[in-house]
Image (cartoon, rainbow, N blue to C red; front, side):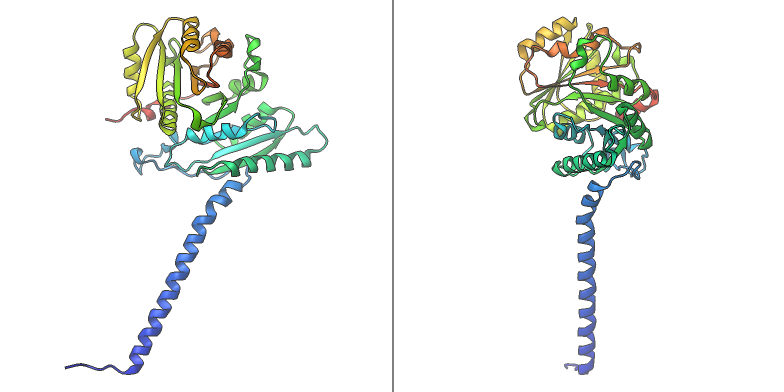
Length: 345
């Protein structure tokens, strides 16, 4: 037996289904629009002290509140005279965890004695936005322009206001001729901030780099920040998908291999012993390629692991083919910070 329903019930049901469909479509369109527009708004926002978000990274788990240890808030000062700012920004982005959401903060300092402060601020702001928009990755960006005749003061102020975890600075190393300075701005920043600092010269696109050479000076493994530096090197090698060769001083390469393996991220690394800076320079002159990237660990003068040869760091690579190199100054303010980079099992 077939039961028949009044026509009015069919009409009512049809209207109800139509209403549900319209509401669903509008909700979907609104959600899609917000998702698409969020990165653009975040990328172009200018702020001296942007709100912070806690990155949630898979192997740390959702309840760990120190995820910024491996997804650092990076400050990148970019003067308008920077030779290749895009390469520095790409390098800074490569140091971040792929699942992290902490931004890279671009900052420029304009001279307030020039008599055209408003124009200078406008030019610097446009400069930073243009660089950020050209970065192809998904890393969030923040931007700020500071006024002042002292560039280092602006960098230090920005680092403190934004609670920066890691500083990346371009470096032409011309100052290497003077054996007592890394440059006035760099010296002042290192003296006032205990943060880890990368001084970089990136001579080619990151996609062109084929190998990382990682130099660990004598006794620097006893300094706080050592494991953080190892993690950074591993993160970079993993992001660029390249091999890494570690150069150590002394007679116990296996010990450094053990220390290296204590840190999260599994990558294949080769270890080589060297007895002096001159031997290392000879090794590099013979075997380095233009697509290699050399990273040397460093500490502030007078701290454990310091070596006077670091003053003339660039001269060690003057006759080698590598176009990219960096000094990585270790963190000096928190001995317990390093524990966050060690394996938990």
